[in-house]
Image (cartoon, rainbow, N blue to C red; front, side, top):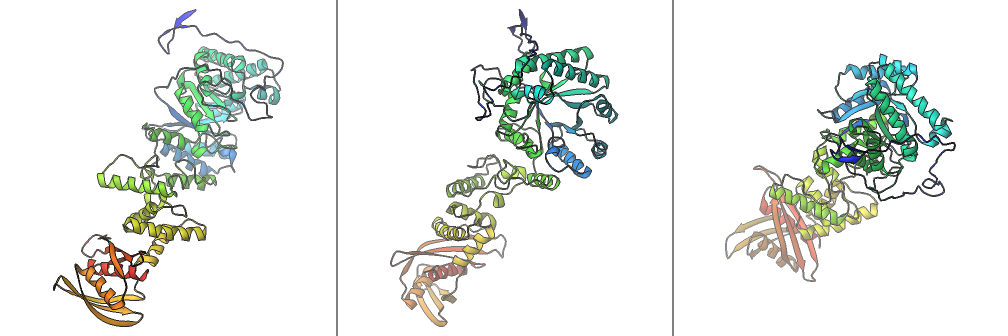
Length: 571
């Protein structure tokens, strides 16, 4: 038969209505899950259409799936996490709901305290074993919606529950009726859906749920649970592992509306975020996540990564991640779990660059933004502006170790201390810094890099020092210089094209040294009338070796002389 589709407004063949296949033996999908090898991904090359809902949101399981994976939380910890979720969800409640246990006195006390906060989002829901008494408890707590476990794979039905498919379906449907009788909206958690017989059990069962929903006039929500993380986001993958196929099938064959359809994933095969994104793209309004992925085994879908991926592609999910360090600190304090340093967006090292070529590109990118006043993020190797999530450039971006390059080392000195070294001097300093890091087998802090720079190049006054220098404009610039070399003082007069050249000539005439001034640069270190100047000098000696020096002083002439003397003392 043909009918107009309410979803596409096209004339389509009427969807086939699948009936329950009440098999005598469990279908354990052994062709895919042999357990002698890794799980296989089969392809049938059937593409289902993308059907991104107009509105998408996140539901949270940090206080349910997250809590059952760690030492149980105290009431105060639960309340703190709930408040954090509300703050993160922003003014539009993108974190729409969160789910609680309700069985212990502590659980109920935490719920009551969270309710007393009178926060609009996230809505408080529960998760129960689904007896008649449980539903009454949900109702008495004033909770409108609860999750109930409706395991749908034969692994669970036959092996755990010791039932047939028909017995399991009848039991589940009776449970849903109890929810209706208690005035509670049931959210059916289709546990282990990626190992289930999709057309033989899942679709027929959900069809029956939809029928009960229509008869009662009460919505039934469907949570597709990838319990073991077996789902794959590949468009032409075959069921039961195809995320797109599952979401499409529940909509197309069971008429589940997008707003009642939710994906719950795990990260056992590192596809949690990709699968959640796929569920959104193919028609589920809701994706069930947890704060930084906390959950059993390898964890759940990380709400932070999922939302930040949207940010980085130009979609604003209206979540508040403006202070990621505070979020991470709260998470670690409350959960007593450590955030791995490479965790996307949240880890300590996610913006860090140790590679010399990467550091050089980042430093140039940052300089370009500063010079051009570019407000949009254009920096190479960093996907989002660290400032947007409360991170800093100086501590979080350029990190120094034995693999670092001159660009990164120069960036650290300039960003933190204002020193803008000439490129060749940066290269020379880079070898020094990398040698220290290599021998100490550790990363170096900005302060340690500064110490190496100061110790090697800055204001070095032994064995040679210029004690005084006086200038007169006679035959160019005439300098009268008081030198101290190895404790002995000497006054020398010499002429040069400029003050620094005259001092250099005086030193050479007094000591017999053979060098010429190859590089000189200067800049202000501070602002204001008492600001210091920084000068850098590169000398080429008679044997073509090069030495560098730096000098600082409130007098630019003195700073230049100090840089010259430092370069000489580095011979």
